[in-house]
Image (cartoon, rainbow, N blue to C red; front, side):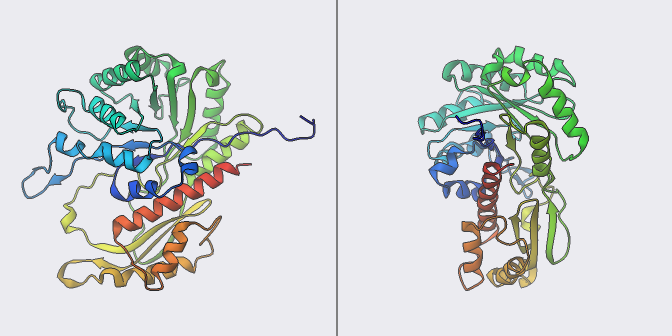
Length: 364
């Protein structure tokens, strides 16, 4: 290689935490094989729905889990993924085995390799299941460490998890979560982790990331800019710590807050025409007229095109790249099907993945 030829640094791998719901899974099903190769989602089993009329869960754990492996297999088309059961409220055995074991083994029969992701909040039963699955299948285990749990902050947490898992660090994909914070303190903390002797080489992979989508959205109609501080922190970290070296992977929560749980009966919700749109350093959140409301006040699909036209007029529309989502938006404003909240999430997710993969491939 010529001394003047730049060294090629592979793009960081994308590992987004993904709630396994219809919109997100349909978005993944539309991606190309090349795109699937560039990212590995962490599928989060959604919380069980609550039946407010009966004051009980709408489904048993087994009924809740039953369709999930097939849905995940369809979304990934054979490409591997992680599985996270943090939102599962009950670990009652499913068909005689731990729910994690059942999902992973069922997915394997469908051609989908799933790797367990665990955290300090995982039960001993979940850790035992993850350990047994790794021993049987050899796919590895992912560990997510939150604020205050990183090795340099409290080494006992990770050491105890590794002891219970009985897993070598070289079989572990490590996730360091900096939450919603974007600051020089996060960069300094990450510098401390990666400067520790042998830290970077001890793990199969290292992924850093956080979240930035708010739990409470702006009120009123119009278009609102929401800073993608999770991405901006990652970008800053890479530029500061890894200008010429192999960079860690990146994770976020797509266009969602990490906590999907609602404390209200969904039947009572009023739904406005809205859309979540990813740009380089900000999301655009647009809200229009009522789509669904009591007393016949909702306009249904008629409320969608005006909201999308507001989005089209924003300077960040189609930036930094134009995607399939932009084509859908343009058609919807010209008489195409406006969809519903699940369709809107599908196209919002699709664009977010395309934009993020573009950014990772072009990270300076």
